[in-house]
Length: 63
Image (cartoon, rainbow, N blue to C red):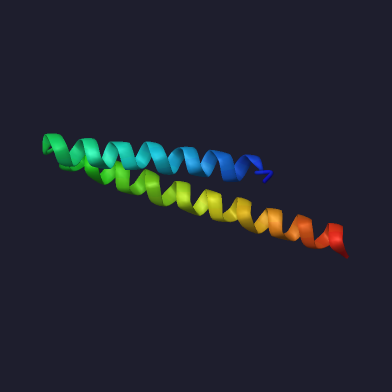
């Protein structure tokens, strides 16, 4: 499965955000936890944009 750069970067941001969120919960740092949640959401959105770009590219190739 080939992934475009938006998909890869988005998934990396998701993972980093998840790690920050969990770390924030573990140490009781609400700011870090919130930053992690935001980063995770941004990563999900970027990965979704990459998915859409890939779908469009695949559709154009098939047409």
